[in-house]
Image (cartoon, rainbow, N blue to C red; front, side, top):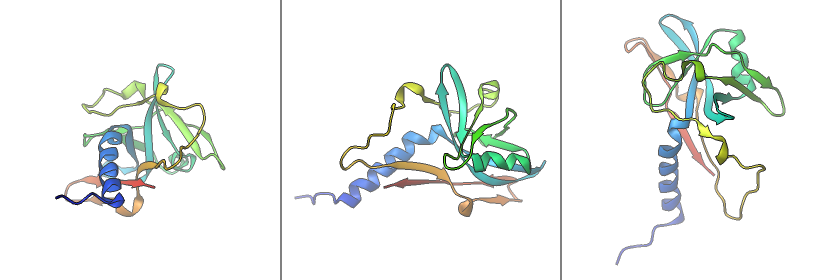
Length: 160
């Protein structure tokens, strides 16, 4: 007789499955320090809205463009793409920024995806016992490897 999985076991499986499902939609956003180095500045997500692709992030992340150029990295590629289009941003308490990305979407080979607009709800209406899954890239886990000449920024999934 096999033992029934605990709620903690089931949530761990759900978190892993959600990580695989959502990974193509999220991106790390990095600051370009010079031709050979960068620093992690935040996370973003790709959305498809009214027949266009956009990068959605926080206003405080987009504001770092005042310090240095920004770049994004699509799912399953090592290539970074410079963010050339300006952000439209709304500060506190919303902390949102958006920039079009259609102009360079296919300039590198990747499997990234934009979250389609038909999957957005008109309003937030959580259900009883509903869980929230978020995924981002934290500064604490990122580092630049001089040997590999790469910025490493592992994703951090969170189910609550």
